[in-house]
Image 1: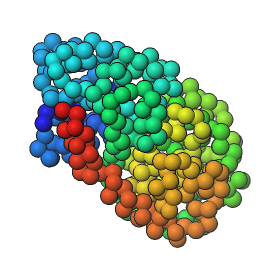
Image 2 (image 1 turned 30 degrees about the horizontal axis):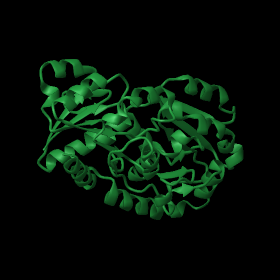
Image 3 (image 1 turned 90 degrees about the horizontal axis):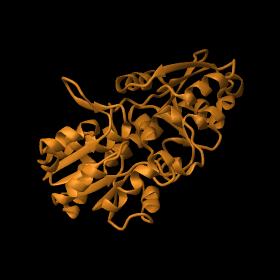
Length: 330
């Protein structure tokens, strides 16, 4: 099978194909490597090169095209694919109905899908009201190195490092809870590292950090995240009840566990499978205090989470799910 992957923000270097978008890496690039290992041909189509790929005929060569995060008008290209008899799979990992900057782009594209793939059952439920084609729930892949579980790391008189990472537009839940994670609130010496991209929410975060809380802001990069996880003790992943976030996957929680770090997150349907590994609580500060009170429990929690990730989230595990969805579509 020849699979096309139409993706955003693709970066080609001398040694690898990568992206600054997590969805491109976790839902296009990591699965593609595993699909190639299973004997399939995969062609990557950066969305900023589509005119050239269409002009030279390359765009219509795959048997089907998987369309990932859409950030520009693709209707003309998708119509050409359909006219050539190619199948179109829309891979949707955002609430494209509720988010205004995406709803207009997807309005004309959704009816063109021969199938839809999505990382969560919650998002599949939302999309089922807007498409008539099959919807396949296929989780995000995990990336990075599996790290040794970070255990017994809290020592007397040592500053505890807390890490938040992600896109800056998702900072609001952390900003709302900064007062919960100050040294005074936690009864411990702590530092918060925030690894993210520039944006208005990052500016707001800077203005809201309490004077007593030491905060380090570092720019997000793929390699930088690996290093940030390596120097962290705890990973903080607060969220809120915004519909656009409730349907998202738990890939950051899974990434933290995979790296060997203990995540503290909010209860949610996607986090429920990790209740025995991550600390899930509505009160972020209470979650940190629970973790610091019993560091001897970290290793068992993290190990349990890593075992689940290994069984359900690697590229090799997920490739057969993608393969089955594609074969049903063809």
